[in-house]
View 1 (cartoon, helix red, strand yellow):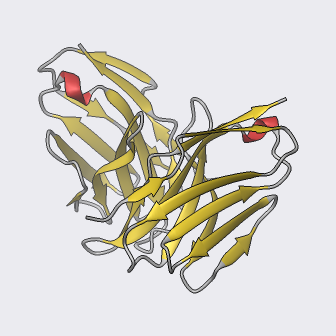
View 2: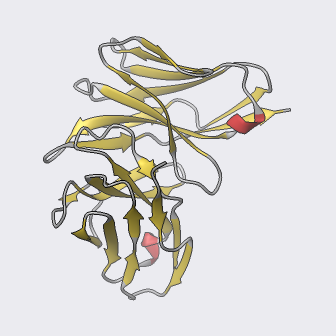
Length: 114
Length: 113
């Protein structure tokens, strides 16, 4: 069945460095992908999204890259800050009964070292 | 900002009890969802609803049921709680069936003893 998975469960980076979080998806029919950030004690929060007709999308300090050929998604965080420490989930929307449902990957925990 | 409120932050229940988890959203969203979150497994979809009084099974509906009598409220019911239902439960809502951008509550950590 469909699944969204992550290559690394944890990532540790130095403050000020760039972070790259990777994700693989298996449903080639998916056309909408999302990254969420979950801080301790909170629910996941939307960061950025991308549609399958795009290869790259940029936000504030974040960039999402989509490679449909190898079904790979990545989130890049520029100049990582302590406040970026969190669990990051990639997710994809797949068609369910009467609408889309969002399927999440296992998550990557990002540690930022001061 | 959209607010999704889950009634309890922590719950402790005994095996066999009937458990109700309540969720309310204040932005007139069409869709509501219940996920459970377990370490290493991410978020798994239990049930969702696109409209009042309708429900759809997610990927792991066994042992759960839901109720949506009003648009703003979506309840998750554990008919007879079991220890393997100990988990973090997250409620979410989205504007419509395109399901772009979910808004999550802070979660309910349920322990079944």
